[in-house]
Image (cartoon, rainbow, N blue to C red):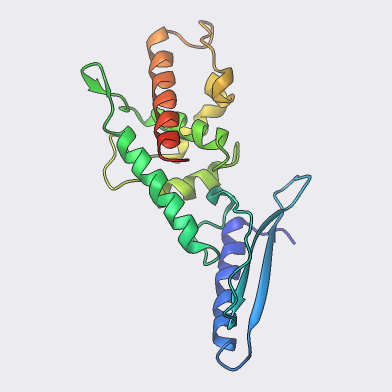
Length: 199
């Protein structure tokens, strides 16, 4: 049976709540979650959740939040901390200047944010629904240009669909140099901000 990430997340939230309730009358429950991405050659172990057991939780591999589990209860504190830092990085990006104007000033500039988050493994390439859900969770209250999924989906028709390190100016696909240079400046600065904040 194929289900969406949101359906799986809803099921996991309900399951965890049932386990919490069951823990009131039982000696403890344990659940392990394994995520298999469509077409993946491997599986990611998301984590182990223990109920009614005072032993420390075993160290686990953390899956990037765009894989559909970011708003769930598993490792919620760790995920929130990471998402909060990404939110702060986006907020900082919005304060950057490009000469006499804001660096980030068009809806299409969200493509640079998408590209860097994908390159760093926080989101999956071409998973625009996952990116949409992630950005709606981490987007600061005030942004220079509101986010729209459609403007980011257009990245697949541009040179910005490539990993950032492979971007290059092509006069046949970019009518003028200035928009390309602006996008490079946004991506570069966002990458720097993330790395300055340990991301």
